[in-house]
Length: 118
Image (cartoon, rainbow, N blue to C red; front, side, top):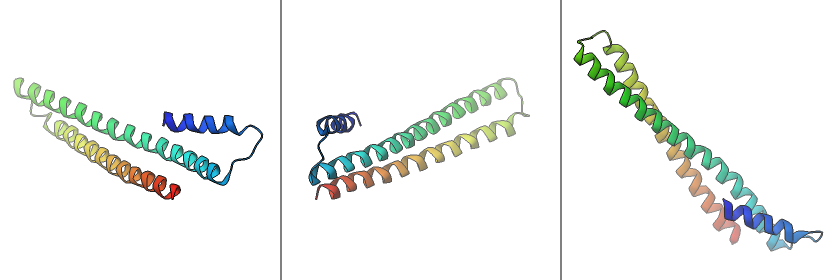
């Protein structure tokens, strides 16, 4: 992203009052679209990592509560513990969906770059 941003800044600086050639215009448009798509992908990666982190926290909390319930022979917590575990599994599923969609979008960006250079 930084390299594309730098290339975009250099192109804008170089432009000044003159107009882009056809090839420069195509490249500039390509960079702009790629930056938009990469920014979107970063959000997907953030969401996937956040979902995985929440899942791990829920699984750790579930494990701790299982231990506490076992030590103090508290069976009333079993339903709550099960709900926490299921929430952790849902969080893993959400993370997997975000990661899969990010992979799909990543392919689309690379495909766009290759097609724009042809």
